[in-house]
Image (cartoon, rainbow, N blue to C red; front, side, top):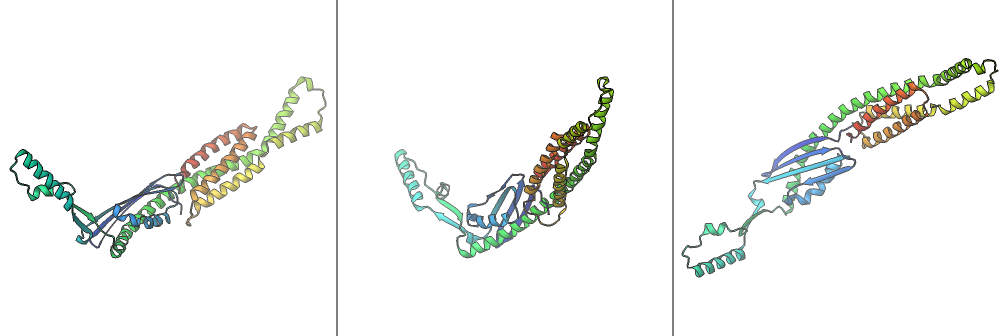
Length: 300
């Protein structure tokens, strides 16, 4: 299924007295860029998280935010810096002696000293690592499911719009096909009228071979049969990809390439055009193709 590159998903999971929140959001990008922001204690899991997300996301700039909160006492380690506390107390005694102070150094004062007592999360054992991954997966899978669902939903809307625009291009291509054979006939008619209206050529016998040669050169110069065949083929492929509901990896790049080729054929037809009607159709086709190209930039 065609997906948009824009999406958002959020998931929560609470296990083993630990709470995880995972958020994913993505925007358009030419390549597949993934940035993960997570607490330092989860750094060992970053590679697994990255691989899981990249197995589902193939294009776009994706931001991942992971929050972690533990309510388990076994995850917390409190450290007392004896050396730092001793240094503070020694300085305090020197100040007290120098200035004759009488205040006593109390426990609350010591506890307010920075870094004397510190707390940190310690989840380095194997059991904790397994529990962390299990909980992270719970939140990640929920967020990823919502994220992909939103990308698919928006991708479906974009595909419907692109199918409509592609049909318009196919109609214009059909108009070119119908108009192309008339260009030479109308040129021949105008040429004969100019000859007949020219008084200097009134009594001059027309060289039919020269006239046929002139018309042949004109027909060869403005012939767009090959371009129309390729254009119809590209449009048919474009329509088939957009209508395909099967999983399509990297469909955005395929469509981008096809639109480049479609634009190339349209430009070639325009450069060969010696007809006002064809030129007008080409202008409309270029406008429609540009709309398709811009819309495709939103697809994965």
